[in-house]
Length: 509
Image 1 (cartoon, rainbow, N blue to C red):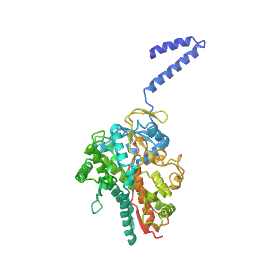
Image 2: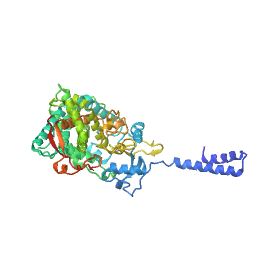
Image 3: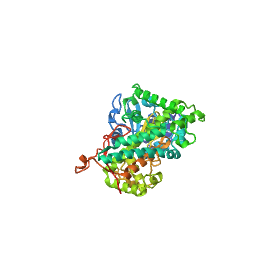
Image 4: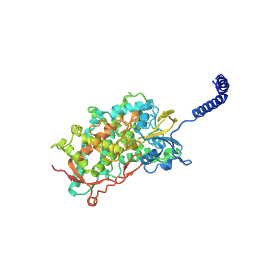
């Protein structure tokens, strides 16, 4: 019914009612006002609250050096769902477990795509990797390859010999320092160990220069920062960058692939194959449902390396820092590890399974220090209603602030404290089903490499706790209170601002 036909008809109907004409007139006026209000509201979306913004840059100036902290502060004022303007890009920020469930589960399909930012297009071969590929059939096929062929539990277990060899190399270096009674740069050591493990699993060998200052791991960290940093290049597309990094990466990958093509893989021991051999075999056999080019292969390899190195070493760094800050927790962890291992000369996978408190420490580290506190950004593919009535337009960039969610006092008791005991006999885990604890994300775009990464973290930390005691360097120990710098640096991948230096002491029962 049109507005012009509805108005006279309503007037006629009012005249049939035997009431005071003045009341009839008032009723009609209020009816018209309500009708007009609905018309105007239906044409204007009900957007989430937004902080005041500046011309051109919008809310970029409010992000600060640590966006996860700045965004939590804003959410306390404007609510757990906010709409920001970052340059030209409308950006939704979600900061509660309930809203995370709406994004990652209830409306997962609408939020399943990725924004195509400048760095991702340059570094990831037009976003043909798994992490940044648009949601669709190509992404499904690539994810299937990664989950089944590269990151399955069986495949992760097949690389245990690499973890053992690289952790043995790490502990040997620490033993050498014990005899000198000097501190070691544990940050540098765990970065090297993580890089070597992932490099051998992915590419078949380590790629480090003799001086240790330049490696493929260093390049991967640079990629991670560029992919996820809050910089103007992400929000103003005309600012192109990252091309030099791409050229360096592309040349490196071409060399690796060519070497693998000329060297026959070990078909008799399929579990010994690295990722490059596996992907080349899939490409050669032509069993995939899409054309699998060398560029596709390189994009996937970069995904595997970048996601597996920086996040793993960052978690190890924070975990060790929290243990040195909380000596009673470290003592309990060491007692458990050493009891499980007993008089054996090395730790095996079955031992790790029995270290329940150690797993609680890993969980608590991931809660307090998620390596990617805002996860990777998502993008809406259609209009969706969120938070009980807010209209979210299509092509809106979306960040889930898991750092804020995992420190929410309405969900976690004493949320700012490092308390591994909170996970004892607690069913909550990090696999994406519990929306108050999402260090690896959730839904369709959750991280499929969590098993690979956690296996490395658990094995490295178990060895460091089993064979060594740890102290802060003497100049710090002499003070009344330990002075341990726990400040953060970077934007999306949050590392310690200062490297962790500790003094190892060889354990003797």
